[in-house]
Image (cartoon, rainbow, N blue to C red; front, side):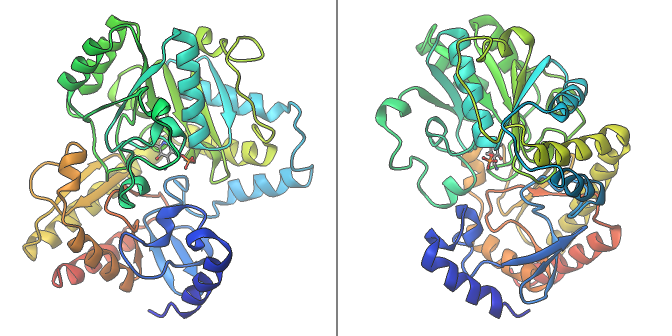
Amino acid sequence: MIYKRSSALFAEAQKVIPGGVNSPVRAFKAVGGDPIFVKKASGAYLYDEDDNRLIDYINSWGPMILGHAFPPVVNAVIEKTKQGTSFGMPTEIETTIAQLAVSMVPNIDKIRFVNSGTEACMSAVRLARGFTGKDKIIKFAGCYHGHSDSFLIQAGSGAVTFGSPNSPGVTQGTAKDTLLANYNDLDNVKELIASNKGEIACIIIEPVAGNMGCIPPVEGFLEGLRTLCDEHDILLVFDEVMTGFRLAKGGVQELLGVAADIVTFGKVIGGGLPVGAFAARKEIMDYLAPVGPVYQAGTLSGNPLAMAAGLAMLTELNDNPEIFSSLTAKTEYLHQGMHQALVDHGVVHTINRIGSMISVHFAEGKVIDFASAAEGNNDTFKKFFHGMLAEGIYIAPSAFESWFITDALSYKDLDETIAAVQKVAKTL
Ligand code: PMP
């Protein structure tokens, strides 16, 4: 494949945008080479500026669960745009999507919309601190909750890829209130709670991790966190920015049957427009301004275009819940095919999968936390990434990312992907 125009555009971009990108992982720093510039996308495919067609396994890092340019979403946005693009005043559609979201997700009475997953998690933690009157939070190594200061402490995703888990600019004062635990390690959490008795406002977690590759919780882990939170008056915050409306209508809470106190959303809930949200039961949410004392606001929050896209997306998922089993079946098919191809060529690997999230770790043994994910062979991953790209398959340009399966992928696309893995595996 030729990427001449993408490379030229990247050279231009670097002159006026730091690193040529508006979000670091896009820059291919972890895998080398120039990033690909997208011209358009439709269904399961991306079309780049050199007119290559790529089968997309990133899907805007999750939101495009029904494929790119999904007609009901596109039409909803076009129609809404004609009526004005932002008012900074209440609109009916905000209540409509809030009602729908509250009906789909367990354990929430009220929801507030923001503009990104970062904002959602940042606001959720402020709310947890305000509500409990405590300062410290527990987060897990390798989990990413956006780029707000409290979370850039051994975060996953790009923060790992770039080798700067503790970013300059995050003050010591902020960092001291973020306690770090190992994913899937309940004893570690117990120790932290014991040594910070009465000081912890919340535990925030990706209940299925996607930012150190895909890592599901081991049996009993989330249940154990729930019990600890109940015992110690700590709020349990599920960051469902990736998993919400993807792994089930009601996200991980529904899929694995564990209740959270506060849930954060992003990605799917905006149908591809910039949206995030956080939600909880009434008494917690009513701690927010203008009812309660915890301040949180946004000029573009509840933006009508974003609400229209999100409403179209959630309506589709709510009306057609069979989509979730269809997504799972496709992901399982891909899993089996890729596993066989890698086994055939003796490539050491572990594939983690749950619902429509999957990732290939080039590691031996189980990958259950950040340490085991980091043991993966990054040189093999780089070769794999570029090999797949040459075959027209676009996976995330970092080993520390989950792949997202979309319903627009046909079994023919999956077979094409598996055939590419067969070919690339020979070279690893
Ligand atoms: N939480 C999780 C679990 C995420 O995966 C992300 C982004 N990938 C975020 C929060 C931050 O979302 P955003 O990039 O929209 O700020």
